[in-house]
Length: 222
Image (cartoon, rainbow, N blue to C red; front, side, top):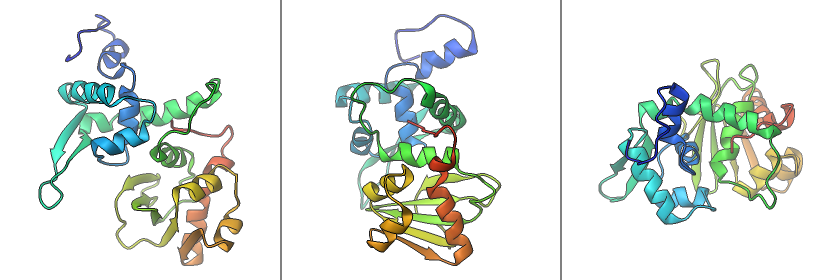
């Protein structure tokens, strides 16, 4: 343990909390589930956290083997944080916590979390029987792959290999559509959302966008 605090309990639950139980630690894991991020990108996804606190949690999570820091090298010459294989095993835990937490009271003045939390909520709520292709989401300057070809739905940061359908939009429009504040038809008519691909593939991608509205109760990952 890199932290001085421990429950001192041999139970696996207590030992897990020794590693990821500090404030912001599990939300950092959430922010890295879709792929590596730079420090400033992590801060952007966790607007309520101070840089000093995030730096401390990163040191602890690196020290405990949950995440690692990697230098990208030239020409980028920046460092990113990413989950280790052990850290990636937390994905179903985080997704289930997101679903479980939808029944908890909404905090007063709660802010919208990072965009990754919406994509993880879509992944958790998506029906693998409907979202069966490989799609690419082009959201502002970011690109994500949706893979529904293996009987499950997984979203990851990065470009897709020969996607059967693509979505192009901005973060605000996508959030509004997924949360039921705008219809897909309205967003496409305005040109703020574009769906390309054969009709069957676009239908699968549309099912992903409507996953949160179809779920009962609504899912949320963060």
